Length: 239
Image (cartoon, rainbow, N blue to C red):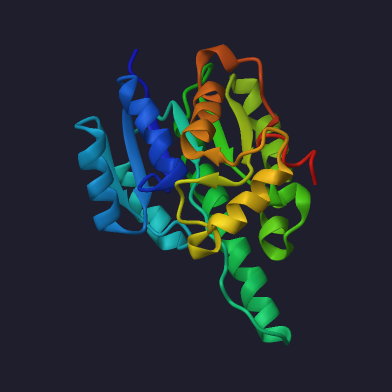
């Protein structure tokens, strides 16, 4: 049976590759994000089975309004949307803006949507996969703390959904290419430095993270829940 899949942040990077994997498998995919042009371009590239839906997931009113555009039955929810707060500076106002921004964009975006569509997840086979980061284990200040919050929340979510036969898991990528996250910071020298921290001598690719997400969303992963799947080439071990 064809599944209904919702992928947040599905217009670029890891989210795009996740959407592509499901679309190629013949699933019906909804990609959600803030930028209409980016989403529409991605949907056009990915094919007729992919529908773009514009929503700022950090805005509760926008989340409430978008629910009518999402499927009544959701077999797979992939929480991928997130970003790193760019506020810099010292003093309490800058600190508050940085920490609040990272929490709102990486935690509340995930929790508000997931809680809003929990009743639509398919009993017995529903899947929730949330994309975290190696930063949750390595530190990385406010961003790492926000991603670590998702790990604690996912344990709670898995316990809540488990009796209904629905799984909830985390994929925590290391450094990967093909995303907007790093911007110009990921130049040749930085790629070499990060590759040297891994055990396999290279950084990852967005498609490799998407493959991990796709597995956890598959029927074969029905006995895996509340887990964190690290996808970092051993970068965490090579710290």
